[in-house]
Image 1 (cartoon, rainbow, N blue to C red):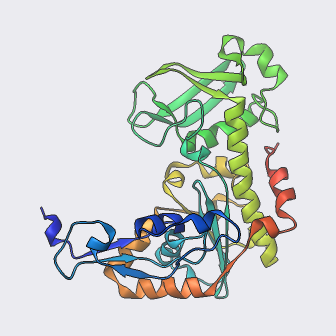
Image 2: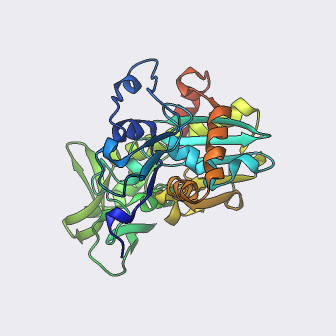
Amino acid sequence: GLTPAAVGVMVVAANTTMQHLFAGVDPSPLGVHPFTPVFLEHRIHSPGELGLAFGGPGAVVHLLPGPAAYVGADLAAGVAATCLLYREGLHLLVDVGTNGEIIAQEGGRLLGCATAAGPAFEGAGLTSGTRGVRGAIERIRLEASPFAAHLGVIGGDLPPLGICGSAYVDFLWEARRTGVIGENGRFTAAFAASAGEALVADAYGRKLRLHPQGRSGPIWISELDIARLLQAKAAIAAGICTLLERLGRTASEVRTVFLAGGFGLHLSLDHAIGCGLLPGFSPSQIEVVGNTSLGGAFLALNDRSALRDMEVACARFECIELNLEPGFESSYIDHLLLPG
């Protein structure tokens, strides 16, 4: 019931590249070595400086601070939203997205890294991928012989639009469990012999029909889709393992893994652990916390101490460059396989 003129303050929490674009600052230095941001600090602008039209003469826009080039203000906001700085013991914040960002906190020490996970778990670039919207398949359960796919669709009994991230995690676990795919993500010979018309080949390899007629035709998952999912899974898992190794810790010693991002809200934790996305953890260690970037921005909008927490986090932050870590590549390759 308000007009734009009534808005006094806007708070923005985004990754470092988006913060630059929003502020009208050229982000190209972030794309070339040594990947140096033009700014990371908290900034205050008038709406007009950013091309926005709201509020009166005193209206302001706060761009929250970020700790590093590839661990941005969205993660600083997440640290505030989860009270990570004030927790005793070892805790992780894992934000699963196109960049899988991971932050560890123990004894006031704050370490973090970013992995190039790609957009597969957001449905992008996959044969029948979609975001978690009405009509998306969010749950998959498989039977191998005879083959059957039992699908849960957001919104109930609707013609499916496609497959979203939580269902892809289900598929990795279910297909491995039932012998539909092997540890390398390829459809097994035994399954191929019994799958009938559900498994077909095209120019890019074999693909499995999960539903005969979705909103835009059959719903497929291909070996190429699986390879991209395994690459995203391996990047996140290897990032977690490398960070823990740097701390001299194991997954069992982590008190809480705060799983951030919309992707995690509808995730089966058992399947995420079983397929190796969250390696070595138990469901009791994981707390799904949703959009902590938005949560931290909301806190900063209402409580100035949240901004101070973010600035402390940025000052303490130790950025781990995974490409320089000797064990990361080997860990990534190991995690490309699915557990037995």
